[in-house]
Length: 194
Image 1 (cartoon, rainbow, N blue to C red):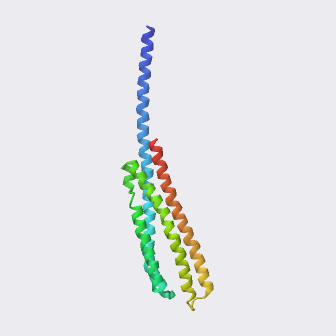
Image 2 (cartoon, rainbow, N blue to C red):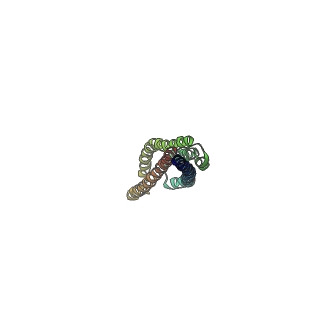
Image 3 (cartoon, one colour):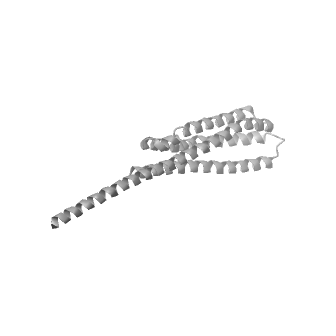
């Protein structure tokens, strides 16, 4: 009789364990869906920011032509600036077009992870191109403005410093935001793989 009770208790414990396992499996599925939605939102936000930046660059090209003409700088500097803006526009498009929000929601986690790493690396590589360009561009721009007699030196320096500070802050924030978002996506993928 004692064996029958023990066997019955053992059977009940097995049933409870099976129910608990089912609940945990459902919890894992729900948790993964929530994490994938969060990843999708992050990818969507990155793409939205890239679109806004792309629109700003696209409007910056004709603005550059007008301002540079008004300032009297050379056509070479204007062309050099427009070329850089166009390259930046293409870079942003190709970098952010790698990972789609739908992939973050439904795609293979390993592919999403590789693409997030590619975005992160692309931004790091872009710094290696953009910083030397900006050094050359700033030097050239200041030189050209210094040749213009109708622009006071104080106005050149003030505008250059203010523009440099504002542009630098925006660029650093954008860079850090993309790196942080990519890191968050990678962390979520690691959590789901465990």
